Length: 120
Length: 111
Image 1 (cartoon, rainbow over the protein chains, first blue to last red):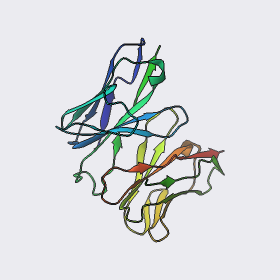
Image 2 (image 1 turned 90 degrees about the vertical axis):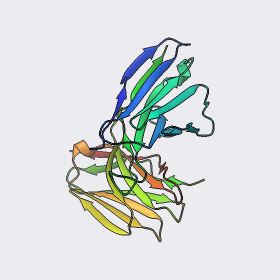
Image 3 (image 1 turned 90 degrees about the horizontal axis):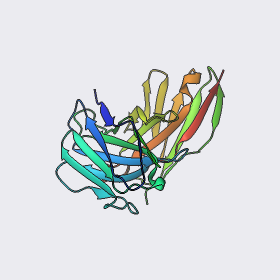
Image 4 (image 1 turned 60 degrees about the vertical axis):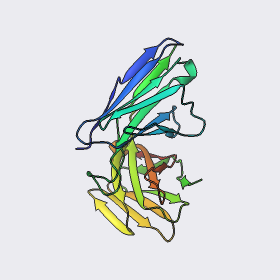
């Protein structure tokens, strides 16, 4: 149980285009989803916390108009990178949790496999 | 700012040895503690979770929590080359459900 999927796994796009990444919890209802970014050999950086049916909460320094997050249902959150630039190239990872947890009492985060974005 | 500190390593151990990974945290009222394993180019995978003082064992993995000293550790017995990865410690601060991640410790198990 507690499987999270992400699509696509890899995307290459031209500078100035927008890219949408989907994150789905496959076997549980995720009241909260998280979006992270990770540069090579660097630590996870939390970008935003997304709660179903409400606006996402962005971390300091993350542009909400550039990284659009929609959490329309208990199993789906999307991250859209608008007007992508080469510096947006990174590994984007989502995770999901249920609070209070029906899977675990520890509010564990379950990560998707990640999306590697390359902006040319 | 809630801090979670880990030695970046790399920690190098021979195959079959015990690998000991440590993590300290600053928020005294933290409630939940997690260890994740991340292979290069992959996303993190949950290995262990612990929330009460003492040891929790799962196969070759043992998590140890000491809230008074504000540290949590992960022991890997009979280390295998396939255990070579970065190990992330995550701590959920008091009053929050959002874990704070450490920078991770790189573990290398050599044959």
